[in-house]
Amino acid sequence: MDAIVHLRKQLVDYTASLFQEGFLDDQFNQLQQLQDESNPEFVVEVVTLFFEDAERLLNELATSLAQQSIDFKRVDAHVHQLKGSSSSIGAQRVHTVCIAFRNYCEQQNVEGCLKSLQLVKEEYSLVKNKLETLFKMEQQLLGAGGSVSM
Image 1 (cartoon, one colour):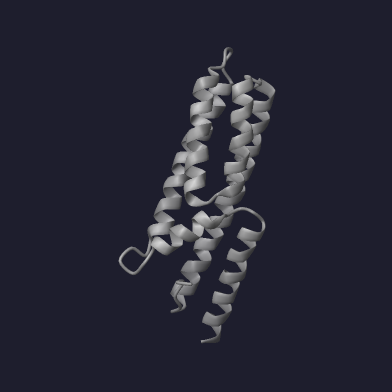
Image 2 (cartoon, rainbow, N blue to C red):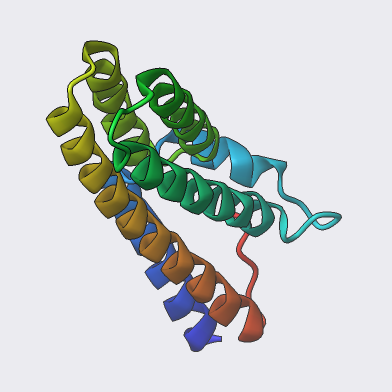
């Protein structure tokens, strides 16, 4: 029993730190509330789709910004998509960086766009690692016979 209590405390503390550090916002809580016995993998599935989507968009952005003549409308459309999908899972820091990125697109500021792409990649990579760790902790807790519902 103690192992479960310990794992649950670790999970709760870790989750709290993700909110305190601004990686996640309340939208992530809302996602978790949609998860139940009938759909225990809901959050993992939604977040995995976000990862796939984000990686595709980051590649598109890198390609678009490497062109001799940059189509800023296209770049902005990709950033807009990434901003929406990061918002939908509560990836707050990715979302925030996308807002600045879109301003640079409007100004057709190549340097600003390239810096923003770098920042978005960093924030995305961080939140991806954090969420993968969170899911591993949940799996450990479930494997030990605990439950993850808060």
